[in-house]
Amino acid sequence: MPQSAERAWSRLREGPKHRLCRHDHSCAHYVIKGFLKTFGLGYTIQGGLKLLTSLTRAFRQPGLLWQAVTHKDNFNLAAFLGSFSAIFRAVSCVLRWVRDKDEELHGLVAGFLAGASMMWYKSVTITLYMATKLAEILYFKGIQANILPYIKCADVIIYSISTAFIFHGAVFEPHNLRPAYWRFLVTLTETKFAQMNRAILDVYGTNASKLMPNFWPDFDKRFSSLEPPVRLVTS
Image (cartoon, rainbow, N blue to C red; front, top):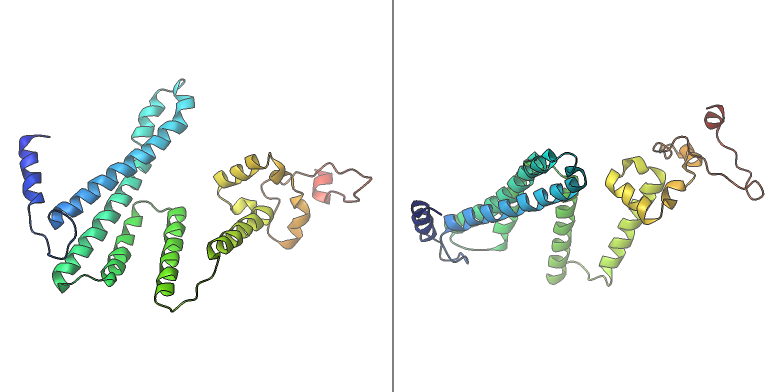
């Protein structure tokens, strides 16, 4: 790092800090450091994943490696993580300065405003994860405050219900699953999940056979009297 930049960073670090702030250096240093750290982490993770998925084709197309490193998704994820951290930290510090006290409400406000960082990386998966984590935190807070009852094995029950919901969708409307997760289910079950006779489920109106409209199992006539739909026979 150049000496001028090092001196500027040192001055930033020694700047003002509210007496209730728990970070070691100035509030500005705390915010900027959080942004740089999470931005670099997000870029490294996303870029690393892109590189790994490009290795098999890189021998024929070496340019894919550079495309993987400079892909816009790398920057978007990094900007999301960096701005989320920076906004959360900045709002928390500002509220301490303005209100001259520190309380849990600050975290709620800071987290709400930091959610705007999702504009950089609009991911349903991340959104659902954060929503479920918020529900989990609020549930345990409610238990501590004696507002909500403690349910034994609640995590197991929630996981079971979630798994049942996903598997129900995978049977009746697999086309609505994320393609990567559908491939995961098919691989995990050695293609058995894709060999279900979904054509007979189309009567329920979920377009269950949409991914494999021409598939019909080779039933043993000794044990089954099922016949393929007219659309499959005529095709």
